[in-house]
Length: 389
Picture 1 (cartoon, rainbow, N blue to C red):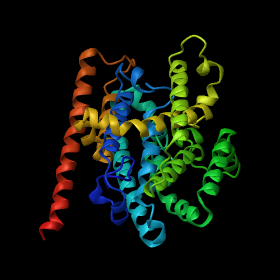
Picture 2 (tube, one colour):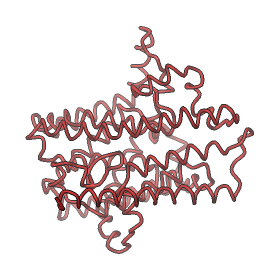
Picture 3 (cartoon, rainbow, N blue to C red):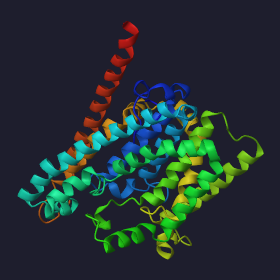
Picture 4 (cartoon, rainbow, N blue to C red):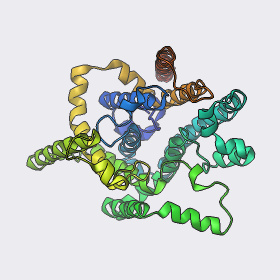
C-alpha cells in the first residue's frame, strides 16, 4: 500500500481495494524517507544522534511516523466504513504484517543480539534486554503478547494495537460523528497526562496479575499516543473526502503556525528567555506526549502539509521517495543494524571511534537502500504479474 498503512506504510499494490480511492502522493513518500533518516541517525550510537533526535523543536521522528501512518490509513479507508467486512479484513492484514516484522525483530534480538551481549559483556545490549536475561521465558511469551517491549522494539507493538482498533474507530465515527470520537480520545489523552497508565499498572499489580512491570512495557504511553493516531485518521479521512481549508482562515492559521514553530525552535536550543525544557519538563514529555509537545507537533504537521508538495517539486528527492515507499522493510532493517551497532560498544561503554562511526553509518544506510530497491523491484513484478496474465 503505497499510500497508507504500515508503520511505515508499504506500496500501493499491497493495500487492497480501499487504497484505490487514495492515490499515491510521492511527497508523503519523501516525508517518510526524511523521518526514516532522522530515526536511524537517532538510534545509531554515533555522535550524530545529538543533532537528529529533535532538530526542529520538541518533536521526534516517532510522532511523524504515527501521525502520517494514521493519516494514510484514514485516507485509504475513508469510504471503506460502508463495508465493515472489507474494512476489518484490510486492517487486520496490515496489523498481521506489522506484527510479523515485530516477531522477526524480537527473535533476532533475543537470539543473536542477546547472545552477543551476554558472551561479550556488552553493557548497551545487556541494559537493552535486561528483563530477557533475568526471566527469558516470561520475556518471550509476554513480548509475543505485546506486553514486554524492549527499547527500540516498542513502536511496532504500539502500531499493531492501533491498527487493530482502527476499524472500531472508523465505525464509531460513522455512527456518532468525528467530533465525539476526537473529544473522547482527547479525554483519554488528558487522563494519560494525569497518570492513567501508572494507575492501571498499580491496580493490576495489587491483584497479582501483571507479568511485566510498567518499566518493561515500552516507553510509549498508549493512552496518550492513541490521540495522535485518532487525529491522523480523522484528518486523513476528511482529506480523502475533499475537505481542505482555504481562504483567509487558512492564511491566519498558517501564520500562527509559523510563529509558534519559531518559538518552540528557539526554546529547543535554549536561547535566552526561552526556558521551556527546564521550567516545565512534563509539558514536553515525549513518552506521554505532553501538551506543549503535542502543540509543537501539530504546528509542524500543518507546515509540512502546506510545504511538502512544493518542497518535493523543487528538490525531487528520489532517494528519500525510494526509502519512504518501502518504509516497513526499511524500518525493520534499520533496527537490525542499530542492534548490531550497539554490540560494538565495549565493556567500558566507550563510544565508537570515528572510523567505526563512519563504517556503521555507511553499512546501515547502504543496507536500507538495498532493501528499498529490492522491495521496489518486487512490487513492480507484483504489479506486472496480474496485468500479464
